[in-house]
Structures are given as structure tokens and as C-alpha cells.
Length: 247
Image 1 (cartoon, rainbow, N blue to C red):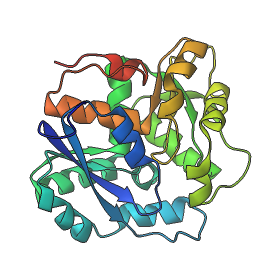
Image 2 (image 1 turned 90 degrees about the horizontal axis):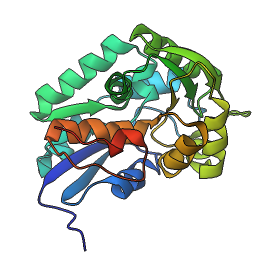
Image 3 (image 1 turned 135 degrees about the horizontal axis):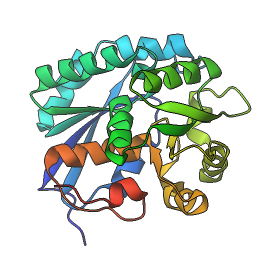
């Protein structure tokens, strides 16, 4: 049996309605790395998670959740929502990471920043972009990535407006189809954005189908966290990114 502790601790700041981030991280984590969570608010669970709602989450007070999380003394603190900082822009994302790191004394990963780190690691510039977000957030997400030097040559969106529960309830088959629609001959990789979308379960299958890397928020988060920790393990089964060894 693989040990679930003793090597490093990851502290996860999770939107309070998110049901998939923690299971995904538990599914992918190498042995010896433990997961510890605190929930974040700042948005209305009964409202559609549009730009205003997600900007509210991004700007919400973190002192309470972060103070509770620091009780376990995590080695890396992870901000586990992509759209909360995508909707504010790259400067906000970097400032938030710096603030969390300064308050916690721990290394910090944001979901949006992890996507950028993953794309830079793979050396790609042209991407297909897919998410369960409303169109307005997708506009902001594409602009965020473009500001960092990544051009979205294809965009795939859901056909209906999903609430918080609906985003998390998309099946892996739904996500696979969404990712397939994001492919384009000019795309060097596909990005599946959202920590509450069940992407990691289909990464390997989707990569086999389109013959190019597929990056998801949660996979990219773990990759950057392991890099910061100096954990070299390749993690098989969840896409090319995690199958890389880190030095």
C-alpha cells in the first residue's frame, strides 16, 4: 500500500461548491504527499458563475481560510480556482500568489498560473481552449492566455449555461467531447480549464485521439506543485505533462 503522508503536504484553497478538485488531486498525487483543504467563499452558489461572481471569489477575503489551512503547515499552498483569477488578469493572479506566499511562508501555485507554467514547459504557443464557463469568462480566459503569449486558434464551449452544480456534474464523456471540439490542425496543445471539471480522467484518452498534449487545470496545478517541491516522480496515466520527470 502506498503511503499517503510523510513526504510533503499540499494545502488546497477550494471554492466551497467545488466537488472535483480534491478527488482529482487524490487520484493523481504520488505516494507520500498528503492533501489538506480549506473552503473559500465570496460568491453565491445559487447564481450562475459568470464574470462578476468569479471576480467576487477572486477578490474575497482569504485571511480566514488561509489561517486555518496554515494549521497543518503545508509546503505548498494551492489556490484552486482558475476562473477567479482569469477574470482579473495576469497581474492580479501574480499578486494573489505573492500575497498568499507572503502570508503563509509557503510556496504558492494558482490554477491560472499553473496553466501558463504548463504551456511554457511544453513550449507551445497555439492552443485549443475548452471550458464549462459562460462565454464572457471564456473571452477573459482567452485574453488572459493571449497576454501571456498563447494564441487560442480554436474554442470549445458547452451548449448551455451551467450553474455551479452543473459544471461539476459534467461527465468525463462530456469533457472528452468538449476537448475533441477544441482541437484544430494549428493547435499544438489543448487546454481544459476549470478545477471543478472532470478532465483528468480523460487526458490520456484524449491525447491518444488527437496526438498532442492536453493540459487541464488540476493536472497543471499538480505538475507545478511537484516541481516546486523538487519531487521528480513521473505520474503515469494523466497526460504527457505529468509523465515528464522533474529535476
